[in-house]
Amino acid sequence: MLFRAMLVFALSAFTVVSASAADAMKKVPVKSDRILVAYYSWSESGNTKYFAEQIQKATGGKRVEIKPKNAYPKDYSACLAQAQKEIQGGIHPELANEPVDFKQYDVIFIGSPNWFGTIAPPAASFLASADLTGKTVIPFFTYGSGGMQNCERDAKKLAEKAAAVLPAKAIRGASVREADKEIADWIGSSLDISKEEADAGFYGFTLTSWDGKEVKTADFKGKVVLVVNTATRCGFTPQYTRIEKLYKDYHDKGLEIIDIPCNQFGSQAPGSDEEIHTFCTSSYSTTFPQMTKSDVNGDKQIPLYKFLKAQKGTEGDIRWNFTKFVIDRKGDVVKRFEPAGSMDELESLIKSLL
Ligand SMILES: Cc1cc2nc3c(=O)[nH]c(=O)nc-3n(C[C@H](O)[C@H](O)[C@H](O)COP(=O)(O)O)c2cc1C
Image 1: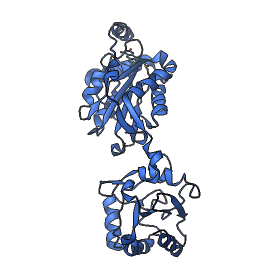
Image 2 (image 1 turned 60 degrees about the vertical axis):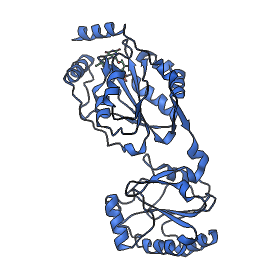
Image 3 (image 1 turned 135 degrees about the horizontal axis):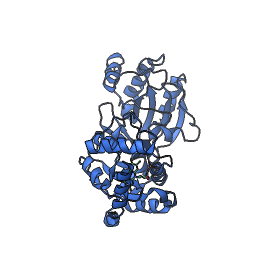
Image 4 (image 1 turned 180 degrees about the vertical axis):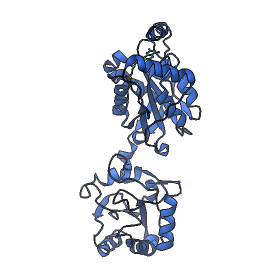
């Protein structure tokens, strides 16, 4: 078995495929928070992991390790045997990963070691199960001595639903730690990564409404905006009545409200987006825009909250449901109200800004 594998490596050394076609490509524009870097890495040296880390550094994207439900044996020969069996059988092993919300990404890097001349089965599983419609996929690989071999070709086949698959990059595993600049240059030649969100301040964010529509904060330019993280089973839930009254009284004068249901505090927003929306409209007759349930703290927080919590005077993790941020007509975050903060004070502030 080992001998056969070594033969594969030796033969493959003559079939290095170049990906320099990337040079001829037009750069793909993307915002850094719309980039996902997914990778599978098996060996102790973590070559593909290192490659993924460099991509994350250069792009500012989110990195996700692909984990098969049944990890491959640590023993090299045993791993070779299992990998070969799966590859020959066209098996896509089950993954242990939490489902990725592909709506959040436009560009998906997919990384894998070269296994028997092709993409490793866990990375193949990830691609095969991903919703790649409209996405740009960028494969990357590390190898022993065989180069790209069929890795790029096979990744492309698995990503046929993608809008585009950019030329892949393969780096010898043993040299990947000397390739930081090569990696950064390759990314620079493929992507035009925009810092638009940082520059645009409050108006640089794209949210998703409860029924899946895109909502851009830029659409609220010139308005006074109240952003509130809500929950349907919280002691503060009755605040919906007052918030709806604010909307009724001041919407015509320029007030907008962005309701972001969040299940991070006591799991008090357990329903689906539709259930939450039905609850709010039927129990509290709400009419203001409601977004999809989102995280406001931690790894999966939506970028808007990172921004809101990074402003002077409104810093710090959200402590509970119904924390409110008030944004003035210029897009400055002027005040944060904690959940039990005075609603009268909130109303006076809104009135003074309109
Ligand atoms: C099961 C298995 C099969 C492999 N097959 C190949 C191959 O066909 N060609 C090659 O160049 N390298 C091959 N390699 C070497 C890996 O591609 C290389 O060591 C890679 O950098 C490891 O990445 P990792 O550290 O992220 O696991 C193989 C390694 C394993 C474990």
